[in-house]
Image (cartoon, rainbow, N blue to C red; front, side, top):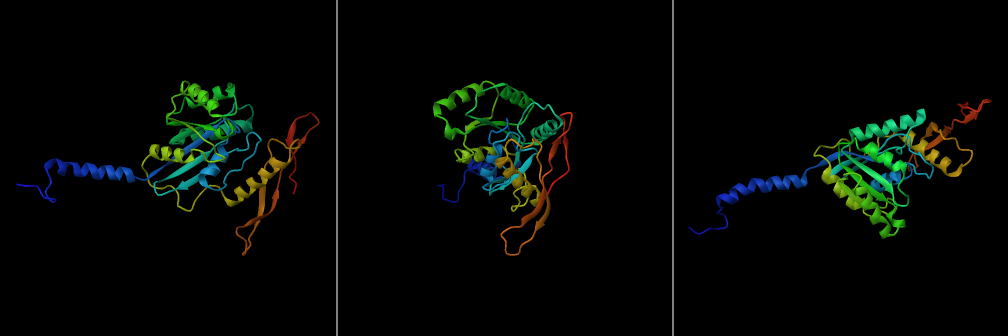
Length: 277
């Protein structure tokens, strides 16, 4: 009996469910948490802003600008990636540093993927050894992102790759530039492949878990870090007291805020002073 276009062999009938299953796998929605970690000033906050296409984390050349974990949510047709920007990994010597590192440890424990950011312009040191030692306890996939490749020669990047691939079993090693966007599309594609199949955790409109009041306070603190140098206390904080609602404004604006100051006591110890307006 000759075969027609409607006639299928037994093998073809068996192959159809497998083909459907493959199609479903390709269109499966992926959702998960991605921890952005690294030493201070490696570009974690810059990367978060670049991936989201808008600013949710402040950026400064001062170390330890990020003091808590900040979520940035990116939703596409293929999945929802929740990026977690963390304080820089360092040996905690004071109570504030210990609290900052607790955010890092919590993020490492709860994330589906970890992205370690490395500054390509900096030499390998004891701080990098401490970071790798911290990551050895992680059971989830770890990506190494060699940042700032836009300002170093290619022959300087290859030795970094060779060194790190022998120090830790990274799932992926990707040279990137958070500032110019080099290879960020590659990073997002590989992250989506690794994330688990799961429904959305946040609505399509959400881009961060932080309140508007917090974001305003962070923007003010960013300006303080930029323009104040020698007088700047390490524990500078900003509190937004009131937010003025304007009907014709594109967005609400902070009306008043408080910057708590520190005063040095007679014994030379630093203690919090009264807030000033």
